[in-house]
Length: 78
Image (cartoon, rainbow, N blue to C red; front, top):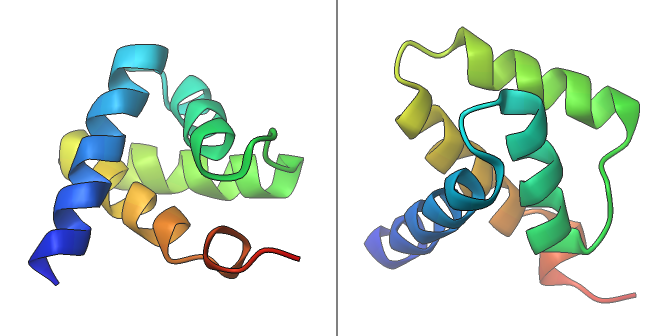
């Protein structure tokens, strides 16, 4: 919904402020914010591929942050 997309947009702005425009740095920053640790090599590679494939990087980063905010690891605490 619109509220959650707003949270994803805010997270994307925070990630961009921390990491700049470099996709690998953005992925690392997004994982630190969402999960408190670095992504696996596989996660980093697939996320970087997603961010660089998109025609509009700003929207891609927001969409990626939206995915992280909806991940089980973010929603549920073990």
